[in-house]
Length: 386
Image (tube, rainbow, N blue to C red; front, side):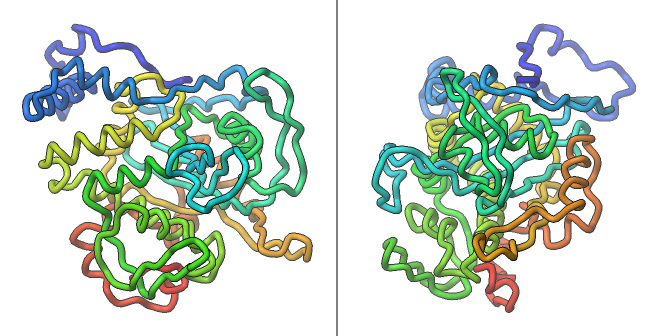
């Protein structure tokens, strides 16, 4: 989309001009160095490793399906701000994905998060959108260019169900007026593989999670969980917390933050076998508009340069709908939500009122996470430990 994908040239290797306070490696050098190290240790050729990871990606161009797009605001910064819409997908036809045993073909989306990286790469936000949000869905287009009718008072995740990522991006841009630079869809089976590749993710579970209908039985305690247990944990709803989609979102945010902490920890980066497995699992699980792992690496390095303490996870301001016919559904609170999206579109820092209760990757999981063994009432409501 609008991300600059200009290839690395010889100019990138030229000496830095004086006056710059800090010498930085180009993305190309970082990626090349990583590939060389991985190739040397694993015995793989650099070109083979690159082609293998690149070949794992499922690339989907949705440009022609998007209409009436918002303009991308011009901001001051050394780079462009980036907005990446991430969707979790349960493709019932995909091996290992349909964990609820639902009948019929198709796909659902349980998770939608907008990741925003600031132009100065000093802050990043992960903003969750509840799937139970009631919205006015705009008309969108299928892969053949045919219109898919919109609707009023429909759930957020219906857009993905009927039109896939293109319809979700169209809905997001129409409702928020925030331009989406890239999208990523992660399937459930791939999520499982990524967690397993890094040896599990540390969590604190305040009380047992038992859901015989879906084969979920997770004991209480603080430890690293992986495999189907990890997937069940982030997807559990009615058997953990207050049974709402909101408490599940908090759990998902904490898990993703803890996973990010684990991925960039010495325990992963120093273990080439884990790193290769993680990259292989991650690229296999993705459907995206980015056609090269170099473009994905650029975004990954952007997150890493920001620092874990500056990556904050929040949820759009919501309130429960009071109408009987929509019990359990939520509405976006106005004007707070419009203000939130305007700040993101303008690439402005979010004020404290939006960041109260935010989860950061710096304090999730890892060594710090293992200290969190004593739940409090609020944390227990969300299925987390404080």
